[in-house]
Image (cartoon, rainbow, N blue to C red; front, top):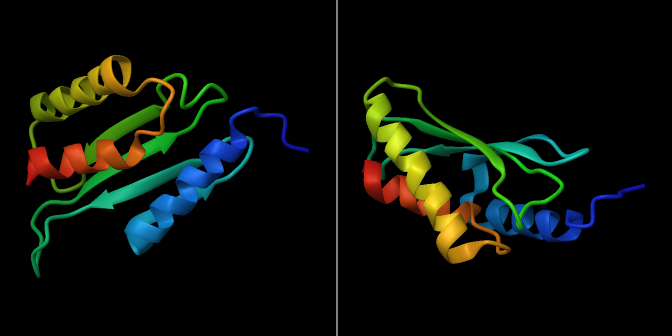
Length: 115
């Protein structure tokens, strides 16, 4: 029995993400909280960069920030840029969208800044 009060909101967000991102979204586990990764690559035939956005929902998400990490699997992006992206996502959540799902917006933010 699911006891997470935000489970339905989180499940809905995962369903929307899977309909938009298709094979880019990989669900690692669903309970007790969703844990997943999103592969982010440029829209080219042979991408040289592959960013992976790891997300783990908490019981409080979307009212609090989920656990997340951004990794460059190709070592093309500097750690300074990765940290700047993390800060932008945190700022976006705290200033503009606390209480609302933000994963797709964070995905787009990463994609626009890196590519």
